[in-house]
Each structure stands twice: as structure tokens, then as C-alpha cells.
Image (cartoon, rainbow over all chains, first blue to last red; front, side, top):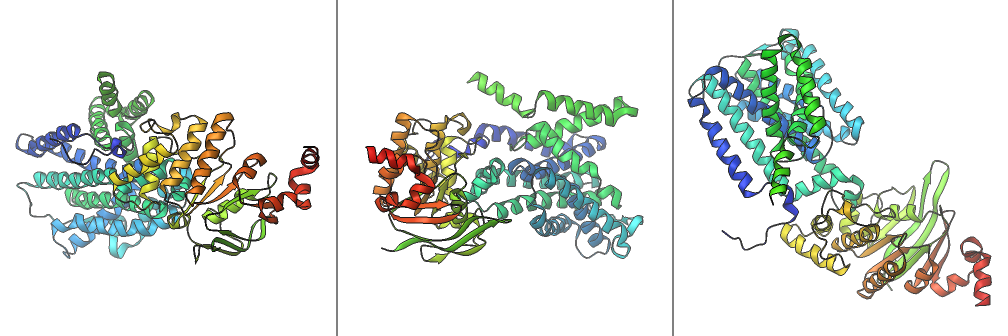
Length: 323
Length: 248
């Protein structure tokens, strides 16, 4: 099959058709998994999907644009609370909760992003870290709305697909799919070029006509909207949320770690990293019950030390050797 | 002659220092203006003020009939003001072609990616970087990076091009090629502001010369008149230049 227009050389950063085909087949397999998986593995796969969403989300701002955000937990938690409050007061139907979570977080990210995206490097990292703390404090003290320290119990929902476990699995799967497609579209678009220019030299990007402020806010809004949707699904999935769980700082750290493991700023890297991370997380928890967090930390450090450009770079190196 | 760029009482202070002080100057369409002055005279600051990287402390900046001071840098670049950096600033992890395509995509206003790419290839051929398209910009030599900077600027479809010491660090044939390129751009009708230390280059390229000294514009006019101005000789060219010229 040949196309009329020559292939774009500017899109050398985006995956080849073959890579996309392999990924598509994998996605179909993952889609059919619930038929054969028991509840334990289904739960694990739901977590994989959620981790993919978080890692891909972080990749917009931290990978493509190069602003190391530690603010994912803020929006995961905000989305969780938005979903929990609206579902427990029966204002919206179940299926709408991720959409609402994403919308709330998108708007919040634009508002928060305007001031903090003026900061760069470490300063931005620290400021983004602070957002989650501020949101957590608000959730703790606004007792009328959030239940304060009591948290919120969510009403059980009628499953949308088969069983409860399948429902949450497919909701996270669809969300991961949407996050992936957005990633792919951005990587291929003019916006993606703007992102890469900003990452490499923001002043020079402005000089060639890139509206850096606007681009950064879009990236930050994407990086917040998807975790918001994931948070809303998560809230229904676990049935109960409180501020310490929803705004867990580990979420903010896991997202960039997974992206680093797989390959920062790439299309598939974050998903690869999410799978690798979860596999290790499970193995380590089973085998080193008392020292699992420490063991996981050591593994992450070793991988990043020896594969600084991510696990995905192994595949790329092999391909380059072969050609 | 219509003015393309007009500065009205432009000043820029850094704390107590007036880096650019009350500069009034107008640059006609199609002219090549040399901007000279000793180190620290405010030349680069002036370019930063025009391109919007720095805000004016006082005064007004007009370009092509509209006021541009206060506009963000990316909007000024889209209006047709391109500048090169004294220390070249390519996007190191993009290829040569991607660097230039990006300029065409944003400031050049060609939103279609494959059209932008074709346009970029034309600009690369023009500066003699054809054949290097797929090289990462970080792999280029200094001379090649300077040419890449040129190609990027051209891809922005500028009306005025501000060249901030684009020839610094170039020698021999590289320098001659750069001069030929600048001359061909001016023949195409592009308005140019050339910051340059080599007087040989200034004299051979520029119709007009503007001289900055301690942030003030001490002379501005046709190249020949400015070179004979005693204040310019005292502030910049120096006594030795005068003697050499008298002897020659």
C-alpha cells in the first residue's frame, strides 16, 4: 500500500505502522482477557490499565514538554472526589462520573497551570508537588462537602459490563485507550512539534512562533484530565475514599517512575513502564513482604541506572542493529 | 521610503543601568542596516527588545504599521520579525529538517506538516545544508549551525531579519559564503539588521550604519557618513583605524 503524499520526516518520533499493528493486536488480546481471567488477575489488569493512564498522562507534561510534574495525585484525588460526591448524592449516572472527573480536572489544571507553569525545572516540580498537598488539606477540612476525615462511601452501582470486576476493568481499559489515542494524536500533530521544541529550548521555541504558554497549559490539562477520570473510576471501584488515599503522594511518584522505566517522551514507553512496574510490584510484594517498598526502589534504581532511556530503548537498539 | 521598523525613544533599564537609552531610529523597507558598537553597548539588548524577549522600560516599537512593544515574543515572530542568536540555539534533539520545519509550522504559518517540510527543504538548499536533513542538529559543526540558524529564520517567512553576530567564529571560506548569502537575501528585498564586529563585513554589506555607545545611539545614517563621524571614530573605531585609513 502506498500513499500519495511522501511520509513525513518530522514524524520520525511517532511509531511505525508495524509497531501500531503489534500494539493493536495486544490491545485486542487485553480486551478479551476477562473471558479467561479469574478475579485476582482481572483486578491486577485493571490496575495495569490505571497505571497506563497515569503514566501516559504524566508523559504529556513531563515527557513531551519536559516539565517534571509531581502533581498527578492532586488531579487523581480531585477526580475521585468529584466522582464520589456527585455519585453519592445521585446527581449523575455512574457512566458519566469519569467524564465529569476529567472535565473538573481539565478546568482546575488550566487555573492552576497558569501560575505554576511559569516556573521551570526544580521550581516547577516543587510547586506541582504542593498542589496535591493543598487539595488534600481542602478535602480534609471541607467536611460538609467531602466528609472530612470520615471520607465518602460510594453507593454500589449496577454493572455496565457483565460483573462488577469486568465493569471496572472495561472502564479503565476504555480510558487507557482514549489516553493512548490522545497521546498518538498529539505526537503526530503540530502541537507535538511545539511540545518537543519547548522541551529542548523554550526561549528559542517562542522565537520561532510557538505559543509556549498555551502549549504548556494544554499539556498540563491533558496530564490532569485523564488522572481525573481514572480517579473517578477508582472511587467507585474501591467504594470508599478518604483524603490520604485519594491524594496519595505515591501516585505522583509512580507516574513519572513508570514513564522513566518505559521511555520518557515516547508513545509506547509509559505503557511498557506501567506493566514492568506492576510486575515488579507484585513479585516483590509476594517475595519480600517485609521489605517490599525498599526492594522495589532498588529495582527501579537499577533499571534506570542501566537503561536511562527506558526499557523500550532495548527494542529500538535491536532494530537499529538489524537494519 | 517607508519605515518597516520604527523605534521611538526606546529605553531599557536593568536596575540602575540603562542598557538601551532613548533610542529613536527607523529602518526602511529593504535596507541593510549595520548595528555596531563596543561590547556592552546594548546591541543584543536592542535586538531582544525588538523581538519581544525583553520588555521596553520606555518608548514605543512599531513594526509594519502596528505597535509591537508589549506583544509576546511568539506573536512578534509571527508578524515577520526573525532573529538569530549570538550563541546559536538549535533544537539539539531534532534533526536539521525538523528544526527548520518547526519554524515554518509556527512563525511561517504553514500549518500543513508536509507542506512545511517541503518549504523547509527549499530553505536548507538555499543555505547549502541540503544532504544534511536527517542529521541531529547537535551533530553539526559551528559553521553548519550558523547556516541552520539562517534556514530557520528564512522558514519563518520574515519581513525583517535581525542577525546577531551571525558571522562570529566563522573563518575564511565560511565567512565569504555567509556574506554572499546575506547579500542574496538583501537582493531579494529582505530588510536586514546586521550586528557585526568585522568592519570589513559591515562596510561591504550595509547601506546604513547605526552606532550604539553606552546604550545611546550616537550616529545613524548612510554608511560612509557614519564612518567619517569623529564621535564614532572616538567611541568605536579608534585612533588606530583613523591612522590606518590615512596611511592607506
